[in-house]
Amino acid sequence: MKLLRHLLALLLVGQTLPAVSQAAGNSAVQSPLLWRIEGDTPAYLFGTIHIPDPRVTTLHPEVEQAFTGAEVVITELKMDMSTMTTAAQAMLLPAPQKLSTMLDAGQRAQLESELKAISPQLKLALFERLKPWALATQLALLPMQMKHPGVPALDLQLAQRAEVAGKRNEGLEQVQEQLGIFDGLNQAEQLALMQETLDGLAKARRTGKNIVELLTEAYLSGEEAKVEALLKEFQGENTALNQRLTKALIEDRNRTMTTRIIAKLKAQPSTRHFVAVGAAHLTGPTSIVALLRQQGYTVTRIR
Image (cartoon, rainbow, N blue to C red; front, side, top):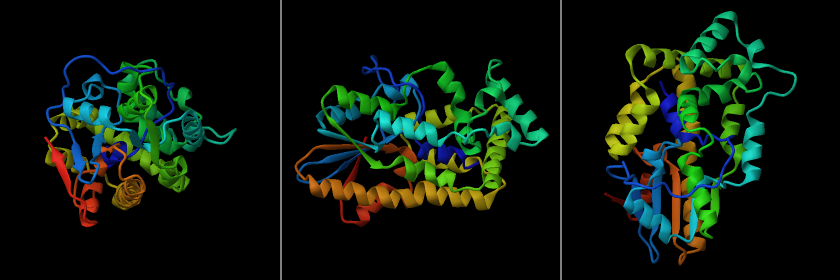
């Protein structure tokens, strides 16, 4: 189903952000999703995956070099406490609403079953305050988050490292722009997204396919075709909703972020920029890479 594309597109936030140093050891990334934007001062465009797995957060030497040499690190969102607080609040139902009251008996049972499959400790009661879309977009990531408790995802680590190193961290979007896409769904649509997620996770478990692990392996390979193929593999039944979300989360945001990247490069042509966005935004014919090239920029993949 299209959940994989949504997971790549979204910045999933809400955890505490401890101080982080660069992970030690050799990078597991075979070929980084890294592009150079040519100019008087070259800028770099890096595709991320929003998980805390050390195989991902230990940067490939080419990425490390580009990051270290940058003066400004641009992420999808500016990673400050105000942003984190706003995002966390946006995911909550207004009191006294509860998630369980929105689900029918079958959905409650299915959700409890999926949570138990992730960990016997997880119960629906722990997620009662979350909006349906918020839980739907995070369910597949729960095993990874439990394996690395309190560890920020790659994007957040980059922003933290930038702050420690005295680099500026700037955002391309506001929280309301990202999460407002889901808040714009009515309750029936949010519940449909939840059902798609539950069905997809059940299918993945039956077939022995760990969605996040497959996505991680494709990312580590650095093969754009492999990432694209995986994004298309899990197709859901709600075609209209999937197409609507894909357009809003990927295609529309690609155009917006490209415009803002160009504006930042033009405003500070002598500044070294490192731009880190979800990898789904950098592959395919409507990607940021493709849009930059359409605007006359020379954008070269670094392998």
